[in-house]
Image (cartoon, rainbow, N blue to C red; front, side, top):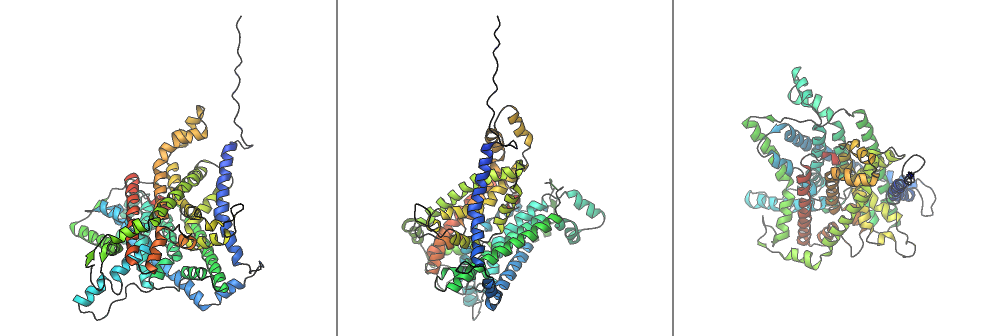
Length: 572
């Protein structure tokens, strides 16, 4: 007699009503919880404080005080003009750099391509110090002009709004270059050929055909440049400029004496966040109008140019790179130099400043590496699933999450730092210590601030991995987690790594939020640099700055090896 054994079906995995695994929903909920607690709640608290009195009553008088104060209005106008000016100067340099590197063949093109990104790793705080050492009133250039060329008084290169513009331009033009390279790399050469066939050549072809097609990338780069300039308060303070909005927010918050000024610091931060949101909305609307979604990366055959044109291109690019590397020279000389006063270069060299920062005060370096590392873990744990949700699901709320991630790019560090100060100042249950008094606040705020780079790097990689690979894994019984671990992740790891390394570099150089949220004994290198410089220990500040530059350069080298030159997508 034949015995028939019934095959029992495997227990079905628990799913929600819409077919999504409960585990996946819990993970999605955890992402939402993170964004609500560490982004939405602090911003709402900032607005609450800005729109209420000390008694908690709704009022508009705080904003009335701001908009009737001539000095604050002047600071607002100066910040807007500085932001626009930096966008203009970085556009001229960045667009020219991108166009030459992408479309023409000339000696040293690969080297210029790499060097054009390097200035981005220089924190503005370190950059302005380097420029002061070389271009300050007693810097190398003025000493040479006065001692050897007969000038009777130094030229003021740095102390004023022009100094801030120089620093921001030569620090931020790589953002514009990367954004334009990414956008221009999607333009088919056939469009240029079609334009040339009807007589459009040279600058006319560029303005009529090439530049309009790069609009999404250009607007993204311009927005980042504007917001980063708008939110930087450390650079202006070093060169004696305090009539800017970010500088006023910082100075009003840290004085802790005048209650009215403290309230105005909160109001100024709220205004900066509101303006950032408005700028982002306008930019997204404009990009939506100009969205050329049919474009995709094309193989571009670079054109050969004549000997004279090659010399001109190399001289132009070389001049920009030399100017951008001035602060590196200044930082290097001052970190090793001794007795550098009214001489073009130091008269002696020593390692004592590195010994002090590396052995006597190593906390700055250790804390920076530790907190930036933890922030990257946060970026990966939150950012990779967030990118996957955006690229692979239709979950409700995913578009809002994407908008929030984009908003983080536009949020000024000053604003989010002050938002954390207000939102997390009350003692936590059971520990009787406020979150802003705990060292964990630093890696958390760094993780939030640098989350978009990991998300965008991962999302860009997911876009080029076809869903059929994952569907094939699931068709043979693999769970979504197994499919992601065994199939998807090995295909996108480069994007995750590149995005994470960018997050790490930018976390290391974060100054705005960390200077506001500094916890005694847990300072990072940017805080140490600022404190050393303000305290008169400029050599120690330079030594820390050089260490920070070397760390950033190492990360950038790895990125360049892994991702090559197609890195603009990380910046949107």
